[in-house]
Image (cartoon, rainbow, N blue to C red; front, side, top):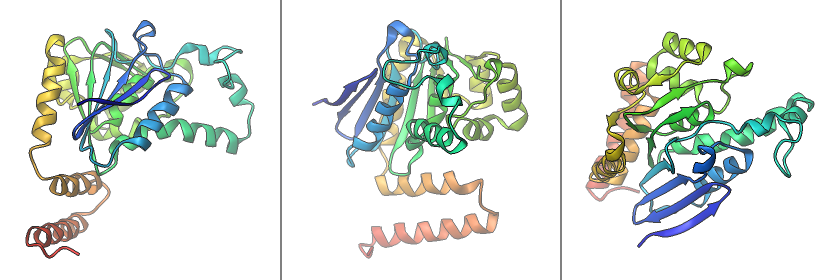
Length: 261
């Protein structure tokens, strides 16, 4: 049985068994993002049941997300929200706190107790690109178009997307993608590691379901430990990584032997 836990401000969270689905649900605006949407994305991570092992991020309509709603740059901004022009007039600490709150919508996807998959079709631009990058894995339709347009607008990508982008494609390619704002299409995304898999658009949902099922096949604790090992590998030396592997394996062996604390 599918249970809806959240459906507000363009974000819908449903749970079925050990799989949750977060859907961007503003197709008429190509799922353009706003601070209200970011708050609901953060809330989705907060209310996610502990039984969930896999989270799928998807979007209604032909585009995953066209990025930040340009209304943010108007003097009026969004109803009930400070405009970005007002934000610029704040102190450094005030601006830092606001952006930090926005980033929370993009950071919980990497936590160790769940595996996250972005199902990406059509445009994934700016904040949309960074939201796809927030997930562990990306399955893309063959019409996907990634672009980091912030630099073209005189800004920088600030929604936690720069580190995973560099990790996936390397510094030089990440710099070129961000500085030019160009589109990265499906073939390049798959070749460079941005996409784990590219499929025809009609097969996107099925491919994501197949991947989710494969991820659920292994015992949860083993997957959690493995994700933590891989996520921390880049920051560790070889010796530190080997130490982490030994500690993780010790925990797994004791658990399998019924000797865990």
